[in-house]
Image 1 (cartoon, rainbow, N blue to C red):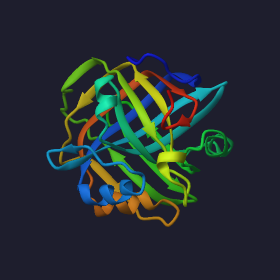
Image 2 (cartoon, rainbow, N blue to C red):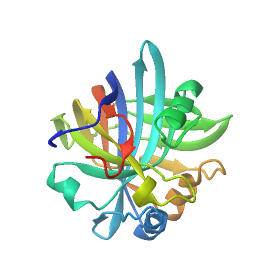
Image 3 (cartoon, rainbow, N blue to C red):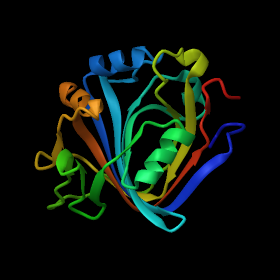
Image 4 (cartoon, rainbow, N blue to C red):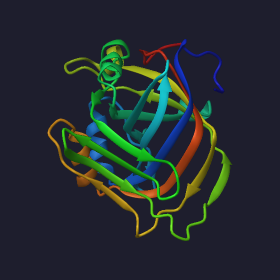
Length: 237
């Protein structure tokens, strides 16, 4: 990562199968969401930019899958250091214990649910909670050629939700993440499916519905590497 110093690495996994949907949505719902965190969504042609990621990998021999929704936020200092700043709204892990560790040890907004995915052509990602559908995403691969193929590298500064009643400037936290590996990137198609179902445990799903989230591009990766640091205060240096 092109910064002078980073917190200690907390976890690194490889290989990672990944379906990443880069989406765009109305700004207002995410501006309201981020206002209490002292953050603003970055604008891309007056739209918010979202990273909706589904992954499959192992940690110490235990296979798990994750689903997460992040919104890109404004941060000139991070941009100058080659970092993309995002706010992690919600994450889900298929291993209940891993979700618990994320919440208690790393202060990340994790929950437990079932995830099915494939990063092969005709890629898909489905998320369910006790049989209730939450997310349905599918990329139709018929006669589709990638926009580009090769190494895709993303360095992120990831802001985390502040506990209710606390000042994010004093108590806000973040971590740093690196996502690397060869990938194929595809433009969206009218035949693709991206559907979110409202659920009381996951308010972000209704936010995505209200904000008219739609795909910008798909990134498919079979042998990625993900690394994250420990969680630190926002003013970490």
